[in-house]
Image (cartoon, rainbow over all chains, first blue to last red; front, side):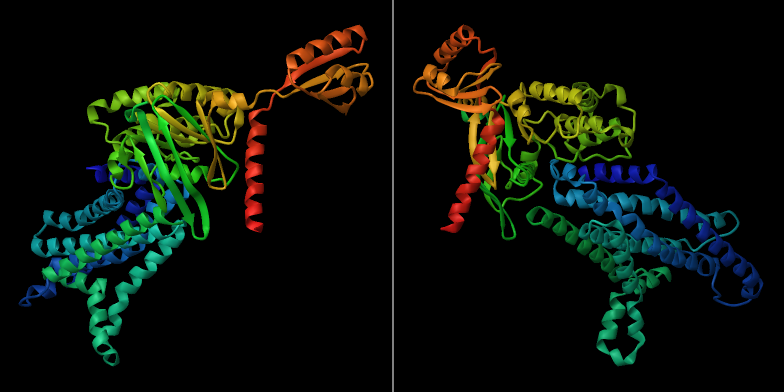
Length: 253
Length: 319
């Protein structure tokens, strides 16, 4: 499939530049620090928790906050990864290579998306190596970990799809980065209005739209297909809009 | 000629950019074994045409058939028969030449088994064998242009579209690229856009001149040479006589005095006139040092056509 060819090139170009390496390093460093502080906290609490019935275990205290923090850190990182996807090619006028090759727009967009997802999956893999290292000295709630990782991957897919769309809108990578960061942050905090009684009905809608809300339930280990469908719809919507946007490139300038 | 040989058929192609009509019902075709030169001043619609033919731009109206396949209805099949070099070669500077060309081979769906072969052939034809492992970003403009061409021919498409392939190259590179293009003629149909006139004369079989979005001339190079046939004689003398003396020789023709002993002579039967002038010049010791038939060059034809078209348009605008 041609999308994988494009994805492979994207991934390759990322790792040729120092960008991919520095992102991996910085993310790992920050999350490693957070992981260790959380682990310290757990060690301090451990003796007190022992006596309590149904007390939170190491997964709740260490792993869940780690994944939650990872989501916030990557919220900052993903726009920087996605900003160049289309806008840079448009600026360097390399898009015509893809447009004049026997490819459909969906293959091009899907290829770009899969390329970024490939990188993000590597990042997620690096992150979960940390909690998995705890298996050496204890046990984890693997179901909960899995639900959390699934949530993180779906969340990152949404970030990437939105970032890709923003990148198709402009020639300037920085504009794409700033606007995708802005929209993502807005969608992240949009449920703040949910708690406000004066907003009423709309508040519920806002809460439902929030990227964070659906992630939180997966983090708690609750696998609700509605959350998964929300993310899948989100990704599909922005991929389709990217395809439409690129098609429009040919129709008018 | 059978229709099987027609590689590109363009029918009534128009393209608007908002209120601007960039292309106005252009029709032409390109056959196998032909290099077609696409000429025009800046902003005439050359690149727009190329972009439409390569599928980078959708036409507002009209039809493009590539090897009998409609580019708009079945873009994938049509584009498989197409190699395109835009005016800016679409290169990824962070890749090496080999990596880049291998990626292009994949994009053009060359089966894995034939990929290395196609890569070697394309590199060899474009003189890139030596630089395969170097980063594109570190190569000179001439090399980049060649990589762009290699990219366009790697999948042996029936049609190769080159948008100003020799811009920014040094004379030796230009000669190499021209040589390469005339080689391509054997197996492919080539469309070439340029505003360098000698280039057209050197490598093209047919010429289309486009101005303000309209085709104003479509002719073979041979036909064009006919148009360039001389109509006057150029004459330089060290000791020029009175123009009247020359007029007497020329008879019914006209003598135009250009000063400094230079004359232009308009007359029928130029060969006979030339002979008579030489005889008289020697006899009267005029110091003849130059006599030649004047030919219109492509440049003049080009300027004539594009500027007269301009005038016609203006008149239309007034009325």
